[in-house]
Image (cartoon, rainbow, N blue to C red; front, side, top):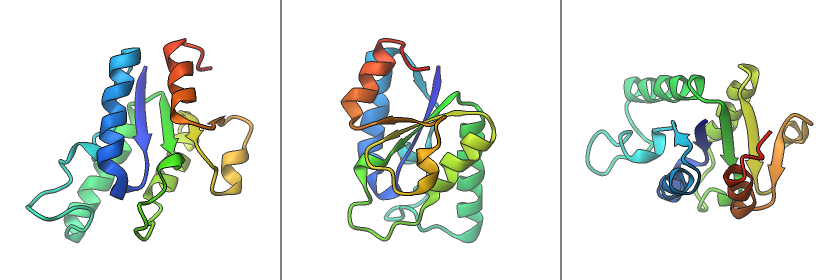
Length: 137
């Protein structure tokens, strides 16, 4: 299965570690690339690029989502106290609209995550266990 991990950009290093963990424990491919550092086009830049860079990164992210079967929203990570921009919520809605399965880890932050077709997990280990057991619906 191909998986997209979504979270606040400020937590990208934690998400990158989770991507490696998913692959090591389950063999599933994490197709999201936003967390691997390539959105940092020059030293010292993170999520703040030029308008053209930001558009390019958004298109890359949507393309990554289009190649996945499951989007996992890592709501348990929060936003590190940074201003939350909400891109991961957009990604979750986009994935759902195009027929991708969606799982939320942690506290849901809005009513849309209460939809019955969305799987919810209290913790990252709980989600990993479901993936390991191939019990993800």
